[in-house]
Image 1 (cartoon, one colour):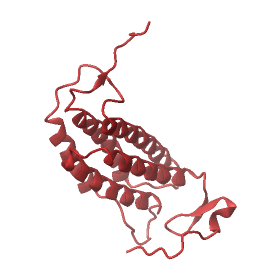
Image 2: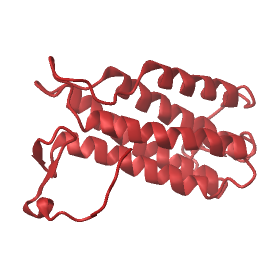
Image 3: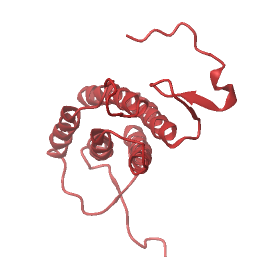
Length: 190
């Protein structure tokens, strides 16, 4: 259980922030950017959920995603170090659950015949926005994992990759199961 009695500490006034391990890093640090973008993804998912009145099962899936994103952010906020006690880490079963959700939603959708422009219903548009933020979080996590001495749990990268796929499929599902998708027409405005 997390207890926050005081919201401001003034410790970040010097441009640094504390990782979950207590280590201080600049606020522009790649690790901080990665878990900050995961938090941004989570906020975008929360906005999308506001528009899902007719889709309680999608809302429930997104509620699980939001909790997973807190787990993922906590995972990224504490670098894996050999010999150190493990903290909360994302696990493969969370990735697998997301894959099951993708498969369940995708079974109701017609195959794509074109790329889709972000839009349609408000819920779909917000899910597309969450998807693009998630892709940025994934790129940052992959970049972080490529750095020497910056270990990243491989399940976090897999989860972010699947999450962007889930958000895409969910956007199609809430767009009338794909009937309201806005299709790209190559060269339409030439």
